[in-house]
Amino acid sequence: MTPRYPQRDPAVAYRVLPGGDLVLLHLDTGFYYSSGAVGARVWELCDGRRHERELAELVAAEYEVSQETAATDVLDFLEELAREGLVRLDGRPLAE
Amino acid sequence: MTAARLRNRLGKGLSRVWLWVELTATALWLRLLLTAGSPRMALGWAASRRPGRIYAGREHDVVRAVRALAQARPFVVRNHCLVRSLLLFGFLQRAGATGVAMWLGVVLHHGRVFAHGWVTVRGVPVLDDAGFVAHFRVIYTLGVAP
Image (tube, rainbow over all chains, first blue to last red; front, side, top):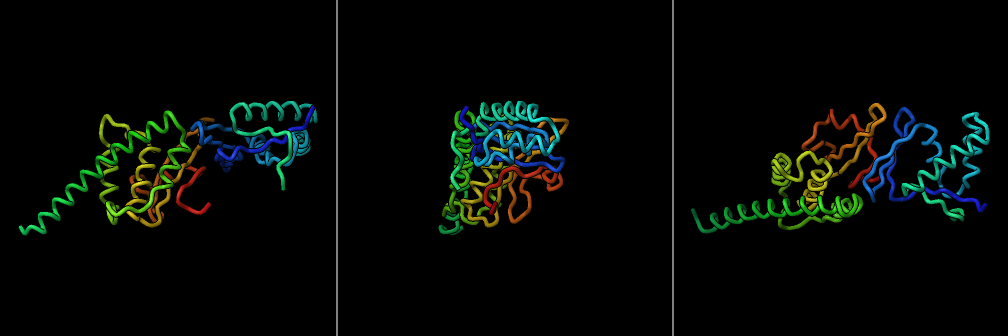
């Protein structure tokens, strides 16, 4: 499977709240979304330079969960973000 | 009353009426833009306002008119902080006011997102309570450096 490089959509404004929660505002739809601290970390990592497996590995290491669990959860989360138009899952990394 | 004073008074009255007409039409337009278009389009409209001769130096008239419009029932601005903020921001820009900024803030309460939009002029909230807006964490701004 071709690796995908999740990148935050520029039409999304976001804010990490003091408790670590993440709030997103899609400026094209006007919808707000929220996520917990792990989602906030994944969102932060979606810079278009790391592929999705790399994101899952980082999450597994940081939150001390198995690689399989992290991979499943992170990929599901990214798919959901992509479905809502919050991230792009490009097949190429973002140029430096 | 001299002719010049009469003309001046008539001019002021007319420009006040025109402000109302334009505000009302813009409020309707913004609601349409938010319904059929997107918040980004509405924010783009507000950001593109430039000082105009007709409203120059009339910050207080603009604030008063937007307040009255927001209190009118039933009308499109009532209970719609985004439209009210867009109107204030756009028309204060046209009045040539300095230090105008628009803010969108969020707060999480029992897992639900609550959002609010407000405008400040030189750091002071307009038509909003400073204590109330302090509860929100800013997620988007217009008119201030990021």
